[in-house]
Amino acid sequence: MNEPLPTAKRQARVTASYDRMARFYDLYDKPMDLLGVRTRRRRLLARAQGNTLEVGVGTGRNLSFYPQDITLTGIDLSPGMLGIATAAAKRDRPDTTLEIGDIHHLRFDDNTFDTVTATCVFCSVADPIAGLAELRRVVRPNGQILLLEHVRPRTRILGWLFDQLTPLTRRLLGPDINRRTEQNLTVAGLTIDEVRRWSIWREIVATPLPSDAPAHV
Image (tube, rainbow, N blue to C red):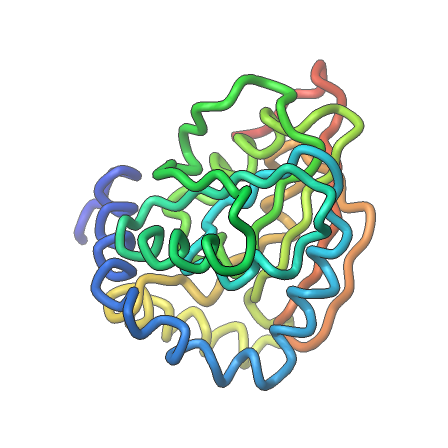
C-alpha cells in the first residue's frame, strides 16, 4: 500500500493542476454556475461585513459579489489563478488586496478579520481540518465564516460512488469530491450557525468557538 503524501506535497500537486487549467477555469466551471452555483455565491457573499478575507480567490469571479463598503483581501496558492484574479480586480474591485497565500499557514495575526469566505475551496485543500482551524484563528471572536462547498452525498450508494471517483478527480483535476465539510467544521472548532442544503451543495455560516475551546486537529 502506498503511504499518503505529506500535506505540502499533496497541496503542491493540486496547485499545479489549477495552474495548468487557470486560463480555462471559468469556462470549465461555467456549467455549475448555470445550474445555480453563481446565485448561491452571490447570495452568500452579500453577507460579508467589515475586514474580509477570501481564501482561494481563484480567478476573482466573486469580487463583484461583495458589498462595496467592506475591505477585501484575497489569497490563492496558484500564481496562474491569481494572475487572472488581478485582472478581474482591476475591472471589478480595484481596492482589493491580492496575494499568494497557503490556507494551511495564513500569514495574518489572530483575530484579524470580521468575515472569512471560501467558495468551492475545501475540496482542494490537502488538509481541510487544518485549513478550517486557520480560518478559526484569523477570524475575530464575534466574526463569521461564510462557505459554499460541495460535499459527499448522504445517500449510501451515491456516497460510495463519490468515494470511488475521488482518486480519479484528485489526479485529473485536483479536488476531492467526497469531503465531509460540515463534520470538519466541528472538528476544527467552529459552530455552524446556519446551513442551506441543496443536493450536494452547502451554504454555511459558521462562527468560532471560544478561544479556550480546543480545535480537534
